[in-house]
Each structure stands twice: as structure tokens, then as C-alpha cells.
Amino acid sequence: MLENLQNQLEDQLHEKLLNVEEKIDLKFKEVESNLYNQMHSFREEMKINLLQHSQAIDRQLTDFLNKQNALINNLTQQIDSYSRVSQAQASEILVINSKINIRDENTSKFESALNKIAERLSMVSSKLLNQDEKITKIESLSQAVEISLNGIAKRLDGTLKRLKESIFTRGKFNDI
Image (cartoon, rainbow, N blue to C red):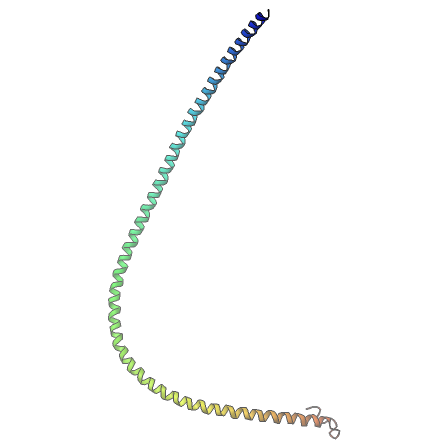
């Protein structure tokens, strides 16, 4: 009986194990199918994203190249303009050089005139030095006179004060 019970248990266990194995197989197939579907949708999504990214890069590249072409055209125009300006300036430089040559000739004439003026200025400056010495003497005399006047003013102030305080004048000098 024990053996029989053991056989029954083994059979039940075997049946359950087979049943569990079938369920695991089904679940594995289901997970595998889901994983395959997710991978497939991920691949499709990546293809779409790559295509969109590629198109965006193409647009950016086209915009960049268009901007570069515009910059090249602008630079070409500036170079042409610079060339014309350079030619105009070259002709102006020739005119200016001829004027400079004329001025150089006139400069030598002016230099001789300036030398004469410099001689006259040196004479005037020596006369000014003499006048400066005279002014210095006058200033020292002026200072001496000012010192003398200050002394006299102090003495007059003292005298006026004594007159105001004197009993003989009785306030006649107070208004001064």
C-alpha cells in the first residue's frame, strides 16, 4: 500500500511537473513572442528615427551650404570693391606724391624764412630777459613798500584805539 501510494504520488508529481513544464514552455514562448515583437517595433522605430535624423541633417547641411555660398558671394563682392578702391587710391597717391614734391620745395623756402624769424626771436628773448630783471626789481620794491605800509597801518590803528580810549576826546572818535 505504501508502494502504491508512493506510485500514485509519483504519478501525480510527474503529471504536475509535466503540466508545469508545459506552462513554462507556453510562458517562455509568450515572453519570446513579446520580446520579438518589442524588438521588431524598436527596430522600426529606430529606422523611422534614423530616417528623420538623416533628413534633418540633410536640411541643416543644405542650409549651411546655402549660407556658405551667400558668404562667398558677399566676400567676392567685397574683394571686387576693395580692388576698385585700391586702384582709385593708387591714382590719388600719385597726385599726393606730386603735391608732396611741390611742398618739399616750398618747405626749404619756409625753413630759410623760419631761420630769420628764429634770429629775431633770440633778439626779442634777450630783450625780454632784461625786462624780466627790471620786473623782479620792481616787485622787490613793491614788497618793501607794502611792508612799510603795513607798519604804518598798524601804528595808525594803535593811535586810533588810544584816541577812542582817551578821556580827553570823550567818544568823538568812536564812530570811526
